[in-house]
Image (cartoon, rainbow over all chains, first blue to last red; front, side, top):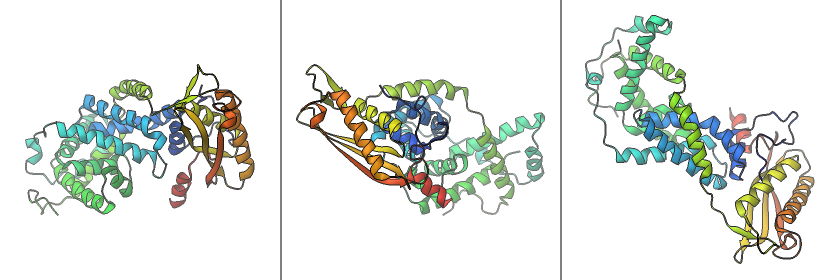
Length: 206
Length: 173
């Protein structure tokens, strides 16, 4: 019954191929356009799953469950989405809530002892070399981001969420504040502490 | 506030550079195979979730129409036939156990175009869709349904492709 995004000639465009914004897709999805929802999903699903997986310590199954519940909630709530914020921010707020609910049900993970060992300070040359990636250094780089993953797992949860949203997903302070239900000032403080802790932990990489 | 367990006297420049490099590594990581597998499952389950809906009487006593279906049909027809305005919201006023009393259509118009012409086009489309869906004639047919069109905002570009918020943010950038 519904003529959706894929086959609808949108008036006002010269060739019908112009790309609607995320919020325009959300508006149409809220009014029952399933194809618009599919397009929005294709754009935003990978980031939501990535975010949930990072916050759930790499547990892909739990992350999928959380993200699935979030997208179901989004589909049902889109008719009430008023478009006053970016739909991406609104969606991550729902994901955050689902992830938080799952984390409360799981026991905290033990901190990896290696993370707490004394830290090195003479790796500058190696870092410069590692930026020039060649096959022999791939294993080293794997170690590098594994170290970061471990260090992220050590952070208090809201710091980890704030750092991930800022550094990996490119959110503004105001958007992070909305997702985490706090203020931009608090976010600024959390990011400062997260960066400091992570930088200290990353010095152990060698 | 600092963590008392962390040493303060370290030169963090090496750590900061390592963090930057690791962050770039994480950003560049390809999507995991699990993500592609999960996408189909998650999308199918989301779209299968029912939305809040009510049933609406038609002039055929044996036929009722879901409010969700009527809104979707109105939106897609308005989108296809009203050139310079996009639907932002459609509200159905349903009373008396399924009798549709009024339809409120909220539009976003393109700046500089004729708002009365877009509004009139929206009225014509709404009247026709209601007649095709509910049947013409007195209640519960379409002749008894009031329709209100309200232009609530404008966009500089094509309102089908952008929201005013998008343009505000682009202007701020």
